Figure (cartoon, rainbow, N blue to C red):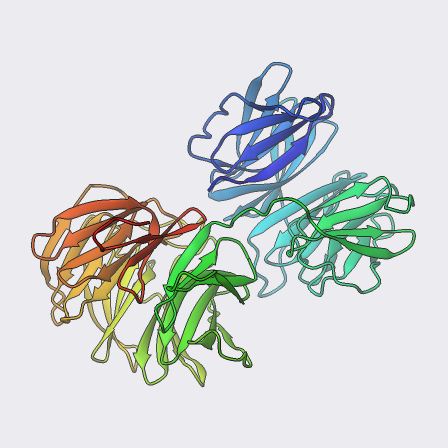
Length: 574
């Protein structure tokens, strides 16, 4: 699914410029309501636009992911200019602010810094942040804002706003407190900068005095998604600050009256891209979305309407633990247990953060008697994931980091007291990866001690799925290869490589195998397929990812924001 984060208005031509996640860019004429595609920008066949801003001379700036570049489009000449990457090892060029031809751009993840780019000469200067406080995690400069001679930068995940005096070239810490939202505001007429804290209170920062004040009367603004200033509110008063919260409501706050108004959003809702699929105890299909939607969806097998259930964070994985469901969320590698029958009355949440520098729970596997294991990916810029052992009533037992050094656990399978772990040459976004092959590591499920290590597919960087079938045979998937292992010796019984594809998936999600008796079903690299267990011949049947087997014996998978079903009945039905 294509979406846009990069949206800005032109200075002189009454057009809105839009950069999409698939690398295309458009302009929208406000008067004629016509949409025009811009010439293809250099290098955008492999990149996404992240943010945008306008220059006084009419040019429009765009920042990119995952190559952290800054580009400029000149509407008068219909030409692009590439200012190049902002720092080696960075994936993100994010917040952009401009003043008199100078752009200030925040970057992440490997080397979060503020970059000053002279858009007239093309010269670039890296402005390093001050040292973080002990133990603080720092991934991005998410937002920037220029007020007078100061540049303000909101730093994630440190959740701090710093001010940089461009004249004296000095930094100061301005505000802290888990700043929420995806943007700080444009300055108001007196030059104040607005932001929200973890409790949803609206703050105003006065750059002249350095004072940071709560100004919204203590009322929650929710998860703010950007701000703009409107000339007047409904009563004709002075300027109002307007935003949209996580529920899609328009939030309007009038500074003069301190009046906060919630207005319904009449725009059509946009579906969210599906990130993960699972099943509940009855085999109904569960789906989690990209982004921090505060819920996941349940699709009843009887064809009823989809239902939503509250959760916090982006769901990376689902798993079963006895009569409960374990839900793994990003960021922070958090695990929450919810009733296996979601229609049961709500109960006090059981939720744990894995810690140890972990961020994404990629796989969850039950170990019996209320115990389960979780495979996690580390935070941005780091390598070396973890395997955590938890108990449903007691929480985290132990966390094993670097089960194989520099490798991230991607897949889990349990049998007869042993936990089989598939690992891969991947890590948090922006990390420098060591070359090497994916491995299968066998752990004692009680003690966590390493019993065996094998390399089933030399040349494949990952072992991304493991599965014990109904007869106890151990199957696995690499990059574009299938294999069967002897679970006692880890010797390869049979294997087949379908292409020599290299692993370039930074999130390491969407690949898995399902047991169908005489066949396997799998998903990888955007395809759903069947594999005969004896001949290992493969048949592609659909496009999609995140494959699960429903309680009705049919296959369910996602494509974009839609869940599809593959029926094994006399007619193909999806």
